[in-house]
Length: 67
Image (cartoon, rainbow, N blue to C red; front, side):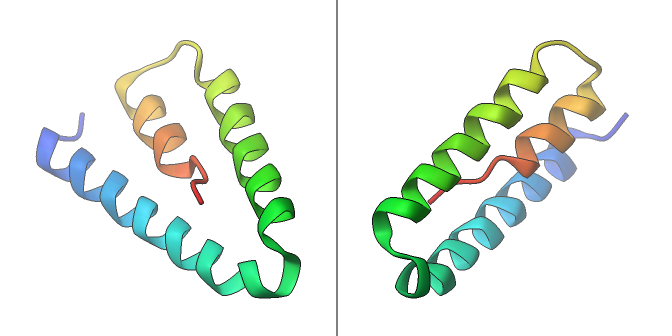
């Protein structure tokens, strides 16, 4: 099982990458479409998150897309 520091670091890195992805695509696609896409993606990931092990929770929360 991963320790708390590794979990926190992984989640922070994934959040940073999500922000960079949003910043690079917002000019091409448009703010409204990006917001809808990323909020929909976050809702889908969190719906699947429901139950699982600590490792699964870490993976799914890292995959959460955030604008």
